[in-house]
Length: 82
Image (cartoon, rainbow, N blue to C red; front, side, top):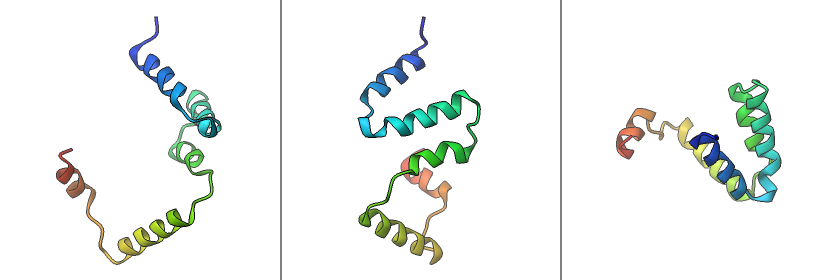
């Protein structure tokens, strides 16, 4: 009998848009083959070209961080009630 987590994964896979299935397959393969270090997991998520809007947002975020306008993670978690 399949576990609840496995059933949830199957249900989620059925909802993945066709254009993201290749990325999902790479991620699952890395986990199954126990090659799932952080770089292996994150890399497939970013295998698409950024839009101009995304590039602009990233540039703004990097400038904010460089200028010290970021918030410590602990503070963010407190603000979100985590």
